[in-house]
Every structure is written in structure tokens, then in C-alpha cells.
Image 1 (cartoon, rainbow, N blue to C red):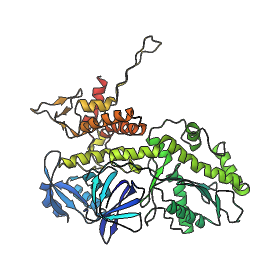
Image 2: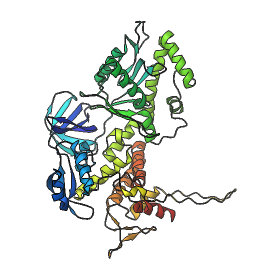
Image 3: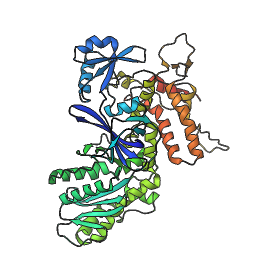
Length: 525
């Protein structure tokens, strides 16, 4: 059979010692799917000239037709499972052997090599099993454009004041609007509330409802760093397996990194998209990032209990003990507000649109470096070129970069002031001057080169990054004419990320000379 679907998650599992890529998603007809690819071999590259030295470390090496940026031939280093790659890569680095693309995630490798960006056409035999409605083993996959409407389920939890004891779990979406209340006393429940005797039973019913409703996306407000983290601790304490995925397997939480960072959750076959992260990632302007404030700003209503956090906590505890109807209303309202905010601002739709542009799954589209990586590595692969591995000891982290030019103002009141806004300035500069990592030339040659105000040199032959922008500019104009604000915003976010990525040391293509070529040209405009 032939089917078309949208990839929601790309991961892998080890089966009988063999890594198997798992692509989960939803088909255009509404059925869920799982594609399993068994023939992929984890690999990276080294210079072919380094092959004899690399073999001393036990590396399994195959011939390759690819080359480096400098045109040097490379060889392909293969490992048995993805987890073996980092250790071998690091041993090679310590021996002074450079590697290429040794940090590319195994599950994404296939998608990058085939330039599959979310949408796929599946040609193969579908079977039944766990994890999805239809399971395809080693089908033929082709990239295509597919749009679906993901099933979204919002949930919220209520706890005691120390966030140690679970009081309730509310759910909204996929036709559901109810709250599960932990009530050892067995009191009568108000409408749309279900009482359970203990926390274990609440977790069990919650997992059962998620499996029955089968959402593609679980969401909430600060759902990773609070709700799911608390539920994971409760599950560990009461010894509940707490499996929320489509397939068997435990939930994995990666804690937040840095002050402004947020955690990530991995569930087999299902995405967790934090409403707060979606809001920030879409650059939505808000006066306050609290759920109550955002709901009032965009929905015209707020939480069912007003007041500051301290007062609200006290009232929640009081209502739980003495007014179950008010307690249930508050809990259900929180879950509904998140769902309605995401629908009003079309934030899940935007994440999917960005996924179709960048190839990253919807939960990773805000990772601008990874998104750029996907696009640029896919383009390089078509040219038979490999890119360097990102290394933490890269000297580029110490290189200075110039920011945008800021004019000194002339203070006072002025008449006849004109304001000029250069449309998409940085992307336009990249297109005009052919600014691109592969087109960059370190030293002047006999070629007819383009020179930017900061002295950076670029070849005139059509390059990858300007070519991407040549395609994106008319796409955005078409989206604007069609009134498709989601597509227009997705393209704008992607285009505007290119400069920042090129100036970030964590990017494999980072080069201060290239980044400064953009800002230097902008300052001379």
C-alpha cells in the first residue's frame, strides 16, 4: 500500500543488538503509523589519508565517495550501535584525527541524507502491532509535503503546597474535559470529575485515558519542568510504571539547562510540547508569561481563582478539602486555558509548519542550530560533501564578532522625520553577496570573488545558503498574499535565524569572518 504521513517523532531502539530507526507519526487518513528501518548503519567520516591510523583504534572503515570542504577524499567509519560512536570519535580526536559529522543523531541521519522534512510517502506492507495503527517495516520512503491536524491533549496537575502529594490531574482536548481527583474519603464528585482512592489509581487512570484518546501531542503550561517532573516523582514513590507513550517504554526527562532553558521529555511515539515554550519560540509578545496573564491577554479570561500565587495556593487547598466543585472547576479551567491559547495563537500549527521547513520534529523546531544543520547538511550531502564535527575545544569560541551598527542619536525634538526599515536586511545581504560557508574563501585567489566591507571573500558560483533564501522569499510572499500567517511566520523565523547561527560557536559552520561580513555590510548600508 501507499500512504502519506507526517513524522512527529524520530528515534531508535536496539533490537537483537541492531539499531532500528523508529519514525512515528500520523497519516493523512487519521491513522497513526510507525516506520521501522533495520538496515541503517551508524557512521561518521574521517579523511581517507587517516585510515591506517584510525584502524589502530579498531575502527571499521568503508570507502566513501564524499569529500571535505577542501576537496579531500574521506572514508566512512562504521560502528555497531550509535552509543559506540562518541567514544571512538573522542579517541580519534585525542590522536589528532579529525572526524566529520560524528555528532549527527542516528535517527536524523536517514532523514537528512534523504532530505525528508516531516512529510513522507510510504510504499510498503502495513501490519498490526503495538505502537501505532499501521506498522511498516523497511518500506520505501519518499519526501513529500503533508499537512495534518495533530491531536492535542492538554493536562494540568494540582498538588499540595510542597508539590509532593498529587491531588488531581485535569485533561482537556480530543473530546475530553474532566478531572481525576485523588480522594481517599470517597466523597461524591461534581460533574466531569472522577474520584480515585489514591495517587497510584490516579496515575493509572491518567495513563489509560491518554492511551484511549491517543493524542499526538501532550501539552500544558510549564508541563515539563513542573507537571511531568512531579508526576515522575510520584510514580517512583508509589511504584507506578507511568507509561504515557504510544509504545512501551519509560518516560525520559532531560532537566532544564541554564536560567532561561527548559527541560525536554521523550515519550515513545508521542510528543510533549510545552505551551510556554511554544509561546516563547513563536516570539509572541506578552506582558507576563504566567498562564493567567497570557490567558487574559489573548482569551479575555483567566484562572478560575484570582489573586497572587500565595493566596491561590491557599484557596486551592481549602477547596480541595471543603468545596470539590470549585476545586474541580479550577483544575479543569487550567487545562482548557492552555488548549485554547495554543488554538487561538495556532502555536502547534506553527510548530508543524516549521517542521515542514526545517526537517526537525515539532518538539525541536526551536533549536535553530539543529534546524540549520539539517538543511545545510542535506544540501551538502547532495553535493557529496561532509561537514566538520562540532568539537567543544573549537578555537572559534574565542573569536570576536561585531554586532549590528547603532547610530548615535541627536537628542531633541525633530520635524519631518523619516523612518526606513530595510525589509529582511540580513537575509537580503546573504543573498546579494553570496554569503555562505561553502562559498567562503580564506585567502584571495585569481578567481573573480565577491568582497564584503569587512574584507571577507566569497565565490560567485550559486551557493547553498543564498539558494535557500531564494526559495524562501517567494514562499513567504505567497503565504502573505494567501493570508497564511502561520506559514509566513514560520518562514520569517527560519530566515532570521541564519545570521545568529553562523555567529554561534556551537554551530559546525560558525565563522566570525562570515558573521561579520553580514553585520559589516549592514552597518555600511
